[in-house]
Image 1: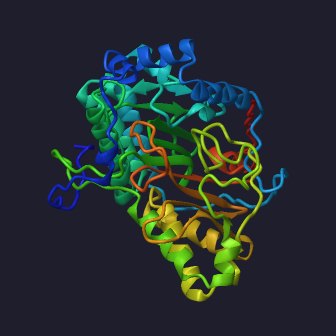
Image 2: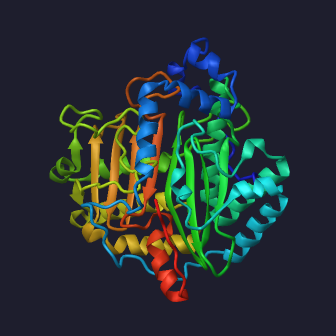
Amino acid sequence: MANEVDTPAPAPAQEGEYRKHLPDLTSPRFTTMQKQDAHEYAAAFIQSGVPPWLHGLYLHWRKLFQEPFKGVTNDGTVRPGLFTLQDEGMPIETIVTTTNALLTLLSPAQRAATQYHIDSPEWRTWSNPEFLLSNKGIRLDELTPPTRDAVLAVLAASLSPEGYAKAIGAMRINGFLGELVGAPRVCNEYSYNFVVFGSPSTTAPWGFSFYGHHLCLNIFFYKTQAVISPWFTGAEPNVIDVGPYAGTRILQAEERLGLELMQALPAAQRDTAQIYAQLRDPAMPRGRWNHDDQRHLCGAYRDNRVVPYEGVQVSAMAPAQQATVEAILEAYLVYLPARARGVRMAQLRAWFGETYFCWIGGYGDEDPFYYRIQSPVVIVEFDHHSGVFLTNSEPAKFHIHTLLRTPNGGDYGMALRPLIAGSEEQLFLWEG
């Protein structure tokens, strides 16, 4: 079965720190949510404008969506010539066969809702809150088990085994959250949408998006090359401590390695890396923190964000610290199969002369924190958040957001598309 993954035997269940912050399920927020399915929940949110901070963000997202796609940059100018067409060893025949097998299981209405043009701007309408703000494609919790498993088989064929296990872990934790708050119709293991862009092909560009609460993957294919970007992975809480999936935990490597790097830097470099001492620092300019994204900058709908370089240059670090940077980036590239990951890692390493590491918050063993690694060809972000479903008003290590972007037009394979058009005398248009 596509949804079966090999996981280590769970450790004895221990109540997590997060249990001190379980919400009051008799409050109106949760008693209302418990009566709604995902569509009713989203409609009520859009109509009511509650909570106002999130509704305001949603309206801002819709405004950002009207901008033509440009790509994340460090200074507002897209740098050309950073990406090339190349053989990355992706098992494209298997991926295409598996995706076509899924499509044959869909009804005509499902298929019409699932397949978009390769250049559709709907690529950009993914989002990570539990609200179903863009309902396109098919939703796994509304499918028959065989069709749902066929979607997961596409994920398994496209990702590395460990990347697939990470995605399944995020989905299971989302289901666990739904149980904790008594709203499994809104948050469950299968509350995710799947949509195809283009037609599955071994020779022409196409891709798919898989998105929902705390797991959003955008994957572009061209022959044996893949771009998995942008993606978002999070967890609240970050561990399952009871039930059949007890012991499931994600994002621990990204957390541990980031802290190891910061603690290992010499004092002068650590001071340079730490751009703010507090997670919500009074020195932050207006807009540097917001209620939803908190410290991270490149989340949903931020396709054109200008993110200046900050912090310490990786090429100035000692070899041991540079090796830790590589280990962090390897963890963020885990969704890519091994050969494609190696090709991508070599590209990231080649840009260490223009790669920066920055940090927000403390760096003691128990401190929550934010960090970012940024170069012309990658941005990764890690952020400990305050509670959304849980009640912690300050950031805590049991609520984590991570993401990866490919700057300078690399997201959604956009930087490759003119090269494909040139090599095949085709024209691909993108209108935002």
